[in-house]
Length: 133
Image 1 (cartoon, rainbow, N blue to C red):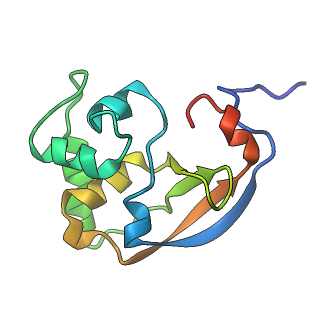
Image 2: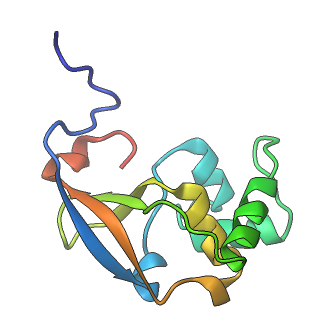
């Protein structure tokens, strides 16, 4: 049986554990998808989405309450799964594959944005062909 290609996601990705610093997290982009593009005012950056959430701007009729709930959980010290990022290489843009809501919630109250956080990151030059990169 042949593998199913979803949106041209690369079949060969090298995965690593990595530590991202607070300033690195501010450069991580959302996937190129209409909801995240709109929520972030076209920037694909969670820090801008969080400002829209704080200003009670909702996109496509979707409530922002989930982001607020995650932000409150962060403040209570609740642990979450690792964020998962992808990139073409160490010098290319980094895109969040899993953890969009969590990453956004960290920016709602930047006091709780960790100084450093361990993530999983996958590298493949073929991400240039992925529709959501």
